Image (tube, rainbow, N blue to C red):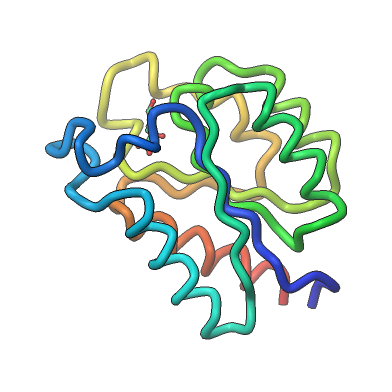
Length: 147
Ligand code: DQA
């Protein structure tokens, strides 16, 4: 079991608008509903959640660097940066903390530009398409990996 009992849940651009943003794709739940879901799920296994969202690629890079010292693992919904960001790929490669990529929607069943994840090869795995349950599935995968 990892030394830290904190899991960092990182959220990228536009995820602050969950609940009002394309509810047909992302559902009616807000980001604070997702945060509560994550805290409740993780506490059952003795983990705490550090839950963050940023619309800025650089801030997400900085938080990944911090993860090395503050977190046992990272569950990461990078939003659209998933498909564009070499910087996030490199930041994940630069740390030894395991990172699980996650998506609310099934990115492979959507537009072609969402089919490629630049960060996937740097992550331990990817969860996609289960609505906000993708967050708890990512935590389950991460906790299983850590134990
Ligand atoms: C998303 C999928 C991405 O393609 C999109 O840009 C998002 C959200 C998801 O959770 O389904 O912002 O990561």
